[in-house]
Length: 464
Image 1 (cartoon, rainbow, N blue to C red):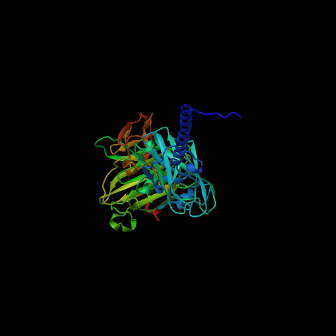
Image 2: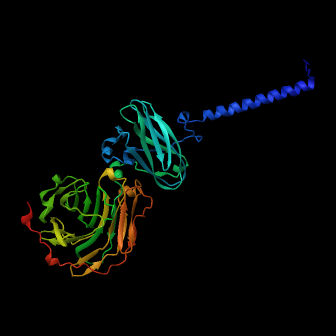
Image 3: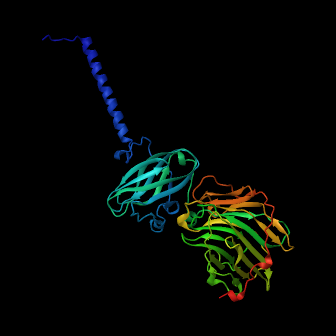
């Protein structure tokens, strides 16, 4: 075999080539090592996320998370400490928030598993990732990066996939960051009870000046599939009370009429005798009593299976009575028997007035239903004055309550289309209506045809 002998110039070229190869190899190794060092905790489990997760805000499940497919579980799972007692792997949890920007959303969970190991699916829109959790104490567990393509409300959905312990997980906070939340996010940060109920919305009707209003007439239509449990579709509100219809449970609906006491308290037992609401009479099948918690006073209701899609009529009378008092009387029109039914008549002491501040509102009174939207149409408002004249009310001011005004929830809307006013709330829709705006509906032009003399007169003998 012939032996090859290299001269000095050849030896130098060969050495340079070897060094070049080594440098290239070293460079590639460095790049790979650097790539490994940028992987998050979840990347190690197979979820590649090249963008480093940074969290700039936290969302408290107590005010922003619902078990959407098992409503009864909200009572036990959504607690002061966040999500607890998540035992049913089939439960689906949604955490709602609103963004003012688009882009990448960095998402994590402050989470633990009391025992065993759990696998959880986390979704935003049509994007999903899975995490495996086994830590016994609360830790910030990164989930990954999601894309937010539009501003407005979004939800993070959590679903249990596997668990070896009794519970899926406990979650104290949802962690968010990235460009999508740099423009700030809207979510409930305090007053979680009211935040879970959602914003209440109102329409205050503009009435003729220098007119004493004796009667207030209104109509409500709740569209099909908008008759959500926990809804109060209030038709005839006035300065001292309210009158409308509710969905109380899956099997019970009511027509409700209430008058506040002039004594301000949340406990009706504290009202002095001379400031208590006096029941003057009630209609057939009507239950009467007292109410508290949102002011106190006299309350009446009739269990009535009203139906979505039908239009219901409400009539309210208010006039000064004896000894500086005012009598308020409510009638409800049953379209099936085509008759006005007396609901109740109450006397309010230390008050001498005709009807003031005619308005309507829409509210949700069940915290478990705050993630579900509902809507009602308010179609034909009239007032009858002490001189015997009807006046149509075609203009109203749209407002909302403190939950909306402080920015906890922005899923509220109201206004007019055609000859109808409408209001909508809850459900985390994004197309809100500006508060304190005026809206006008088209005139119907035909006053109600009511024979006031034919209405049932309140009778104290019905009071028991």
